[in-house]
Amino acid sequence: MALGVDSIRRTALGVLGAVLLLVGVALLVLPGPGLLLVFAGVALLARAVPALDRFVAPVRVRAMRAAQESVSSGWRTAGSVLAGLCLLTAGVVWGLVPEVPYSGWAAGASLIVSGLVLFALLVWSRRRVLAARRGSPPDAGRAG
Image (cartoon, rainbow, N blue to C red; front, side, top):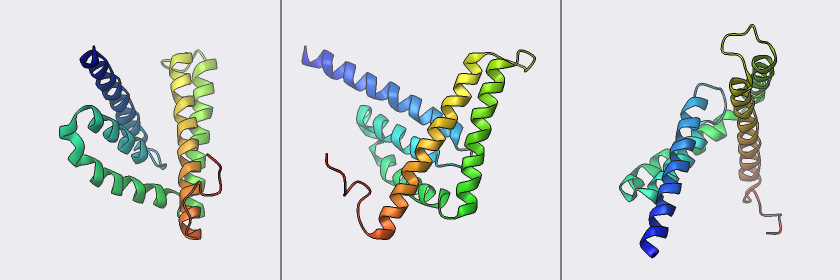
């Protein structure tokens, strides 16, 4: 029985890791911290497939550097916010305007979700950078 539970857990981690990795790769073309999702996907895949563990540390270093750079200046942050707003707007347009190629809420929802993920990662990155500048962990003031 324990072997079955372990197999299910590894499969679930592998599937979730693969999805995060694919979404992260798709977000790499945006001016936001898409590499963070790539890191999360690789980390989960490494838990499911231990042979991939050697890729976690290098991807983590690059992801954290990219997260810091994505919010390092007002212009970069503004560009990322603008990209997120464009994704949200495009999602609504794709969902509502039938004349747009491949229109429908399936395409629109995926664009909207991408925009929301971009905003969530930007907020996380910004909090992390501000906490590092203050010299404290990002959630030090929170009660767990």
